Length: 289
Ligand code: PEP
Ligand code: MG
Image (tube, rainbow, N blue to C red; front, top):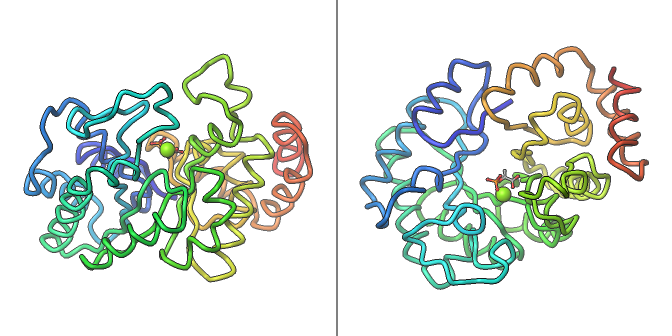
């Protein structure tokens, strides 16, 4: 059970919860009000604070997920009609490779200085080629590479993506958005972007199977992991770690402590047989209480 954090202060606060590490460090949130690209030294200092707060623990640093709902002034976003389907996340590196190089240099510098070994992952991966390119850049700096599974294409080809990276982390917020073709920011469409949607959970199951087949970890770091009942279902599906907002860690951990892995697996099987989010929730509740 890990925590999602956005800076050193949040990491120090998360350290006060039972979180065993950081499953998602959203680095772009450090720079929402920054006009110019921060220097490698400035970045290394910020990343180092999070590594220090969780010294000796697992920390997964996500490279800048800029664009769409989180534009960064220095990322040079093009004017787009559909930013959620546009140049965001890893796609920014195509025309602006320096941004990713500098960030990986900064993470490597923070790792070196602290003596920690953070994992790094890229957001919005859609193809195995993107995963391959990111992994090569991370490995050349001695970092352990993974990617986020947020785009249905990446879930469907998880097996081929895993030929290049050491772990996967499923971002259920975006995976729901792109699977259901429904804007995650729209309150009107919230029933479609519900992570209990069986189509979303089917893609989670597929991704987990691909990881299990090659013995590589597959975590979930979207808000689905903050729902205690759904966290049990995800565990039953075979997810190897859960990462949620620090405020949710205690509650999710408490629920997991009340149930057996077998119950979680039964609930996961029941959920995969349903055809609606409400039926999925009811099926899980019937097994897990
Ligand atoms: C997600 O998409 O589920 C995720 C964890 O990333 P973010 O919410 O930052 O887009
Ligand atoms: Mg996301």
